[in-house]
Structure formats: structure tokens, C-alpha cells
Length: 286
Image 1: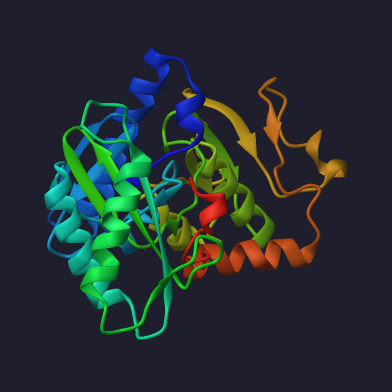
Image 2: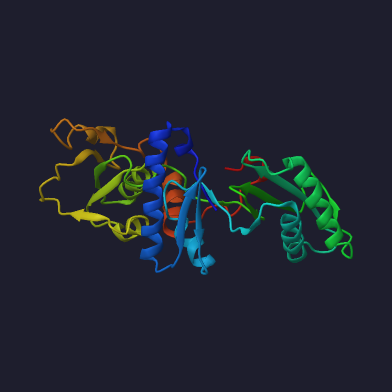
């Protein structure tokens, strides 16, 4: 189950267009990583069905526009099916003496139960299924939380939110030319990609890293003609060099200009290793 954040703030026509771009980017990234999957979108969510779950998660974390994702098990939306699935999930999840909570949501459809009733019913089912383990309910800071999302007559049960890069879908904000000749230039280009810009790279520093996030990344030589579709330039330079870069009147973006070297190093490590916190706390879900 794939979620976005900023896209949801757009008007309906723009949101639908951005959802379409995000879906195409997901399919493109999965294909580039040789992951067989079926991708669908409905009701502010995208769904990726695949047998290679680990590979799909690794691939999806490189797609800009995805705020978080969850590996979910699916069942019908009737209360008995959900109770059965949650009980099964809890048996594998909970150890003796641990605590748990149920967090349930619905999309507003008429399912014959409220979210609170669903939490109560499934919580009782978990206690019954694990009565030999002496587990307990704890709503505040439990050892485990079992999440349930009921959408479009299906129930999705999962146990974590995997954090991703968020931002806007790559290609939704036009193209820019990035001068990448050092780490600041590399990070600057990556940050503009995160903001939805297709980046054309001028320079040889770290282009393979950027290609992780855009399999179709384009490069040009310093002496090459500037593509006409470019809307601006990206640089890791400081304020003293901005005015000397171009006289075409196009804007120059310097996203790292206020960052110290420690921040650049941290972002560079994230770009290299995709090191993002694995789980979003319950109180800060996306």
C-alpha cells in the first residue's frame, strides 16, 4: 500500500494528473529493477501486488512522491474476515507478555461497523487467539500496533509504516540543468529531483547515484547546446558565483546554499544508501 502527502493538497485535476505520473514512475522503477508487479490506484492510494515483496519495497523507496508504504495482507471487508486475518497476523507478531493496540480506519463506506467497533472486535479476537501468551492491550506506546485500513470493500492489515523520500513525482515540475562537479552539486541535483524536476546532468561527479532515482537520467557535456526545454539551472555554488553562470535570464536554483557541510554529508549518505528511518511512529503517520 503506497501513500503520498503533498499530492493530496492539490486540486482534483492536478492531483489526478500527479497520481498518474507517480503511477508511471512506480511502474518504470519496478521494471528497471526487474520486479514483476501489478500497480493500481484508487481512493488516494496506490497498490502494488507482487511476489517479490522485499525487492519491491527497496525499489519503491527510490520513487519520489511516495511518503510511506506498508506491506499489507488483504481480505474482504466483512467483520469475520478481518477478525480472522488479524488473529493470524497477531500470532506471528506477538511474543509472550507483550502489549498491543489496534488502529483501524475506514474510507467512509457503509460497512456495518464503525472504526471503534472494528478495533474492539479485532482486539478481542487477538486476545482470544493469543490467550496462551498472557498479552495485554496498551493504547499508549504498545510493543506492537496492528493497523487496519478498510477501503473499497477490502481490508488491508499491516504492522508498520515504511518511510520514503516524499516530495513530488519526478517529471511533474519540468526539466532543469544541474552542474554536478562536487558533492554539493550532487546533493543539489538530488533535492531538485525530489521536488519533481527531471534533471539533465552536466558533469561527471556521482551521476550513477542520481541514476538510481531516475533510470533515464540524461547527461550532456559542458560544451553541448543547452536543451530548449530547460526551465532553469541548478548549482551547488555559493552566492558569489550565481551571477556568473548564465546570461539567458533563466533562474538559478541553489538548494544547498544554506546548508553546512555536516548536512551535506548526511544527505549524501542518504542518497548513497537510502538510509531512511524504517518505521514512522504511530503519532506521525503519513
